[in-house]
Image (cartoon, rainbow, N blue to C red; front, side, top):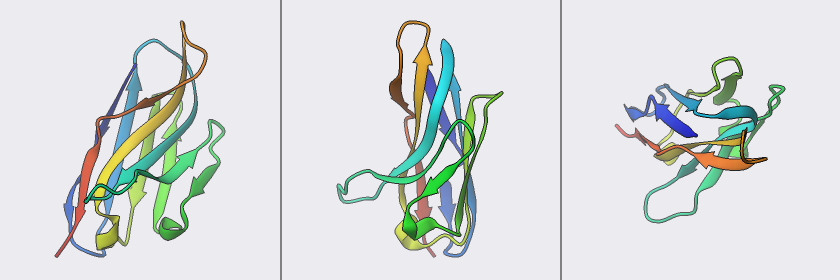
Length: 120
């Protein structure tokens, strides 16, 4: 199983970015999918948003109203639309998915990370 992110980059404060993540491989089903981020200077990875297979989202308080998570179950993809970006949103964003394969019940898989930098 492989998760591949795309869409990171440099944006000015107040700008927008959209992250995408595609899951591929021997996937039987996908439970939750989410986005985590790790700020510079060795801070811990933190949950940004997660979405269930039924489409119910949960957000960390600091991004509510600015970020929107969505998924396309037919394509095994998850997205993160980020609006009104702030410098404190800077970090490496990781896609995560809880996946059942043909040989494992449920396991967490991670993407390689996408850098998001919010700076003027």
